[in-house]
Length: 254
Length: 254
DNA sequence: CGTTCTATTGACTCGATTCAAACTAAGTGG
DNA sequence: CCACTTAGTTTGAATCGAGTCAATAGAACG
Image (cartoon, rainbow over all chains, first blue to last red; front, side, top):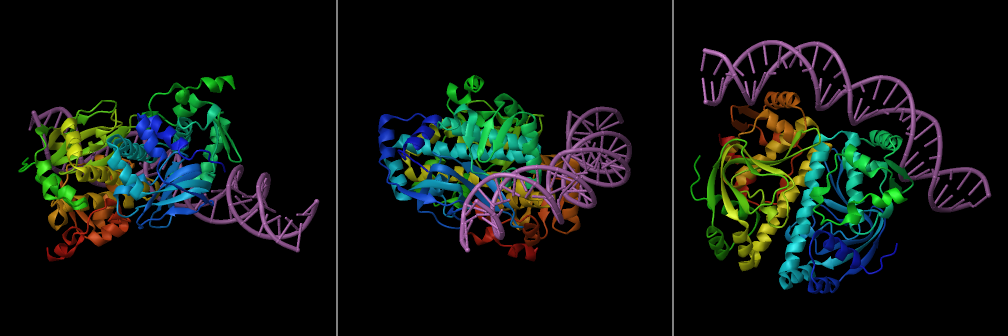
C-alpha cells in the first residue's frame, strides 16, 4: 500500500466540502501524525472505550459497525482515504460503535490534543471539522432511508453509488472504476439483508448491465441507470459542485 | 399548550449531556427567540432550502423526515422539548430533509447570527453544541441498527424506549407515563414497517404487558421488559448518569 | 351529524431468509 | 508444483415475516 503525502487526501476531502484558506492548509499539514499499517479486520476503536487519537484513513477502507442483540453485525458506514471516521470522538466520552479496517489499510493517528489545539487556533477549521461531522450524520440519515424504505436492489445500488461519488471526490474511482476490499457478506451487513440475497441482487445488477464486479474491482457500467435504480440523489453528501465528480462524460469516452 | 420559561427546557437538555457553567447559562438565556405556535403537520424547514433560524422545541413534538423515490415517508427522528432539531443547519448550506410539527407544537426560532455570535463568545458552548450534534448523529446510527437488524417488535419497542428516556432526561415522562402526538401510522413510517403490521406489534406489546397506549397517552408498564425486547442499551444517548432518569424505582411505587 | 382520521381484523401474496450443498479462487506448506 | 485449506460466491428448495388489499369499527372534528 502506498501513501504519498499523508495530508494530501485529507486536504482534498476537506476541500471537496468546504472552503480552505492557505493558512488553514498550512495548519493541517503541521498536525502530528503516526502512520500505521493495519491488517484486514484489525480494530481501530472499540465500543465503550475512550479515544485519545483520531484516525485518518490514508489507504484502503475502514468501516464502522455495531452488534445487535443476537450478535448480528450492522455496518454503519464505509470510509475511504481522506476520511476521519472517528472525528466525532473529539467531543464524546465513550465510543458507541466499532471502527475496523476493511481489508488491509494504512491510517494516520492524530492526537486529540493536537486537533483541539488546532480548533483553538482556527475558527474556520473548527467550523470545517464541525461541518465534516454534520455530513457524516447526513450519510446516516440517508442510510436510514435506505434501510427503511428501499428494496434490496435499491439498497445495494445506493451504497455503491455513494461510495463511487465519495471516491471520485478525492480523486479515486477515475473512469468510474475502483477497487474495494469488501465482500458480498460485508455489503449484506451494510444493507441489512442476507448474504445469499445480496448475491442474487449483485447478479441482477450485472444482468441489467449496471455494474461489473469481479475479484476486488467494481466498474460502474451505467452510472445514470445505477443512480435511478438506487434512488440516489447526492445532495446529502454536501459536496461542492465539481463537474468532474458528477459527470459521466469520461465514462462515455472509455 | 404552555411553555413557561422558554430557555428552561433547553438548559435542562444541555445539562443532561454536558457540563454548563454559570456564564454559559447566562449567555443562553440571552439568546433572542421568537415564539411561534405550530399546527399539526406544519412544516418548519423543507428539503433544499437555506435556513436562517434554528428551531428550539418548546412544547409538543417535532419530527424529521424524508421521502424516497415512490413518495414513501421515512421518519428519521422525533424531537421533544429542549431539542434543537435543525442545529446542524448552522454549518450546512441546504437542508437535506424536512422538519415538521408532529401534532400541535410550540417552537422558538433563534437566528443563526445570534447562535454564531454565541459560539464566538464561548469556546465551551461551541463544544457543547457540537457535542449535541454528535449525539444527534449517534441516534441515527442506532436507528440504522434498528432498521437493519431488528425485527418489527424490537424496532417499535426500541423507539418507545428511546423517546421515554429522552423525555425523562428533560423532566417529562414522570412515572414512565407520557403523552405523545404520534399515531400508529407515524410509528410505522419511523420503523420502516407497514401501518397494519405496526398495529399488530402494538397489540402484542400490550398483550405482553409491556405498555399501555390509548388515545395519546403511553404508559410503560414493564420498563426492563421493554428494554429487553427492544434490545435497548442507552449508551448511545450519551446522557450523563442521573439516577432518576434510568431508575425504575418510581415505577414500582405507582 | 356526516366527514375524516385512526385503529383493527382477516385473507392472500411476496420479498427475503434460512438451510444446505456445491463450486471457485487464492493461498499455504510439504 | 501439487494436495490441502480456507474464504468467498453461487444455486435450489422450503419457509416465514411482513406487505397489500379490503372491509369494518370507533374516535375526533368541524
